[in-house]
Image (cartoon, rainbow, N blue to C red; front, side, top):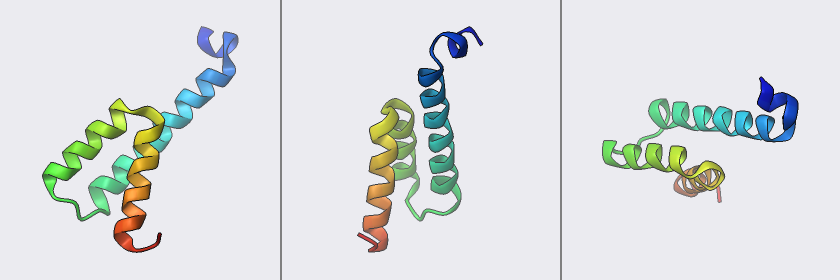
Length: 68
């Protein structure tokens, strides 16, 4: 917990990022209708591209649903 003691902002941002990625992955696995190839690509994007991957996933999802 030395990272939290020295840089609490960074620790909280990284924790928030992993929570959002976990939520997006749960949604991707259980609630989306993507084919398996697209799901694997989204999993890679969510883990490799920290903040933009999460934003891109939800933006594409809402566009597919016609909410944007």
